[in-house]
Length: 432
Image (cartoon, rainbow, N blue to C red; front, top):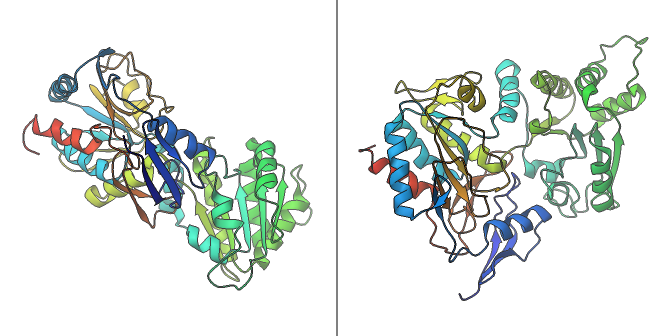
């Protein structure tokens, strides 16, 4: 094939959706030739690998013609009375078509990243919050506190794009910034300091706190900011360092507290997030501070946005009754499969081939997966699909959920898109 190149391409492989990449497609597949991170470089090469001459559909683990696989998937969907649409790792275009199919079949919808999303959502429901955007962090912040995360593991170019920058909109010279890591893994923080913390205008420090003490640390920091703790308080946490951080937050012109809910994998983690949002509210009585809850990977914010537009509810919503029934506990994928309350799982995963598929037991599995995903021996049907931003165009919501970026196809391997398959399934089962 003739080599093709795209500049200023958005990357769909994490929530930052960096839109300055150069992609090249030729007979060897797709590669990121521009300022891509290691994750983007690896995933573009994986999902953009050549597929000519390889099987692109499987029935019961055996290679099959695409049309035969589509027909078998239609049969499973037609027979299902309580289907579950899971994974939902696609872009806006794919999710809109899946929503139409789910409405037709009365399916439950749940994203693979729902647990992290719900930790944030419970906080918003209970107390609200004050949050900011990636652009605001880049152009205004003078203090960035990364709580319980190094950020860069999940969002590799965060500091390069949003913090350690030379040019901002409102200052003639680089902003003097301070970054403080609270309870992030020591090795990961060291790597960030080595690669991104070398700019003269950025100071990076870390407060070492064990993961299982982070809920306590968040509550303690909130009390220090509010000035409500007794002076004789005794704790084995680094009280002096946290007190200094509290004072720095109160003195900052524009402080930002960053967390990644997916990293807060402990019981009742929403209470930790609520402590952080509470201290943000207190700081805003005298100066400016905002939260930055990062998400958006695997298309989770894109799927959530479409569901909110069309049903008024986020994922973990059932359409079985003809209207949306939201239940974040009862409609969880693992819970539904464990209780044998569904009779089909339609699993969609187009971005990261390493994401695992839940064990469905005796429940039939129809999987729409991107290039590079292993053959799933337990799948009744598996179809290889196009990845948005590689060989399909579409739209993708980034981590702050205020911008939907266009994704452009850089190659054409004649793979069906999620939207095309969803419409084929629906047309074979009657009008939507």
